Each structure stands twice: as structure tokens, then as C-alpha cells.
Image (cartoon, rainbow, N blue to C red):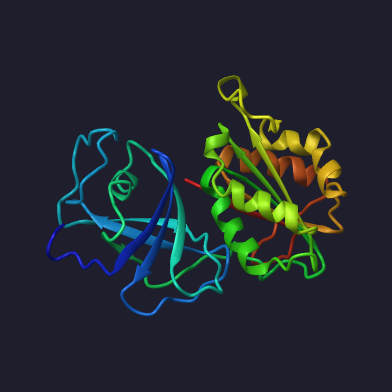
Length: 270
């Protein structure tokens, strides 16, 4: 790594779902900054950092001393205070993720000094239950929210819908399945789209909007799309977010903005 690029954190733990999907835990050299679940921070590596071998070749590599930085949602609880966790998928043609996937436990990287973002529970109507709909690594902020704010068997109901192409792309699946079994106020609904190539999958098949259209939400959670009792969070593929926003606004949900409180909160990835 370039000598004059200040790495200020260490990758202390890495969990691989498969070759292009991982969860990492990062510890800064100094004090851990505070954050609200749903916020994001920045990770970085210099241009001189090696890329994982099965990524695309760069036509024009960045200068070796240039710090490549990208924003990532935090998936760890805001209350644990030991590390910052991230849920990351490999973009083979990307600048940063092929370098991140080359890292091993103990390697150094750059971590932003603060967390930012307004995709949090701060502005949620207090008495509302929560419906969290995500695709891919868009699940990350919901992991942080559930880990921080869920009080098992008491308080508001959390419904987490997670869509992925294959079952092996369902990160945090075992954690959410355990919570679904143990906590009466958490419902986890994973759904997979490419079931023809994932014959072992026995759960719901289809894109996330079909969970709502097929009546599975009512069946599993005991309630439907009621704007009077639900606040909805959308995070992931922009096409999914746009489609779901249209569907939900047609059901009476209103977009939350800085100027006006609503019950539909939106975060688009990439």
C-alpha cells in the first residue's frame, strides 16, 4: 500500500457467504464514532491495493496513492460499541469492492470518521409497526435497526422482507430466522427469484412486491398494508424502490421528506 495513504482501521473479522458476498467487521485505531441505525459511513483503500483475482481487469488503474472511497450502510447495532459491521457484495468491474474482497483478517483499510444519513428510525411515527423491504445488500441498515431497536415480544412489530436471486445470497438469514422463531414481534420473509437454478429453496419465490400481492404479509404477520399502523422502509435496487414506492403510494402511504412527515422512507443503492 502507498506509504502516504493513512490507513486508520483494521479488518478484524470476515464472514464469506460465497466468493462475491461477505460481512466484515472493522475496528478504528481511535475511538469508535457514534451512529444511528440506518446511517452509513465510508470505507477506503489506496489504488495500490491488490484486486481479487476473479474481478475484471482495470483499463485505467487509479494512481497508487489515490484513496478510493465508497459509502456503505452500517449493519452493526449502534449499542454494541466494539466494531463497525458491513454487508458487501462484489462489483467485479468496480474500483473498491475488488480491493476490499482481497483483504484478510488483520489487514488495514481506511474508515470514515463519522456516520451520516437520514434513513433512520428517528422520524418514525412512534406507535407505528415497521415494514422493511430490501433487496441484496440493501438489507444492511435493517440489520442495524433490528439489532438496535427490537425488544423481543414487546413493543412494535418488525417485518423484514428480503429479496435475492438465490438462497445463498440471503445474508443474515440464520440470524433473522432465529429471531422469527423466538420473537413474536418479528416476522422474516425471504424471497428468491431464480428458483429454477436453486432447486433446494422451499420458501417464497418471486420479487419482493409479490410478497405483498400474494397475501403472504397478512398470512405471516397478521396484518396488511395499513397506512394507519405501518411505517415502510425501502432499501436496495433503485428499480425495486421505484416500483414499490408507486405500489405503496397507491395504497395510501406518503413519502417522508425533510419538510413533511410521512410513513414511507426510501433509500436507493447505487
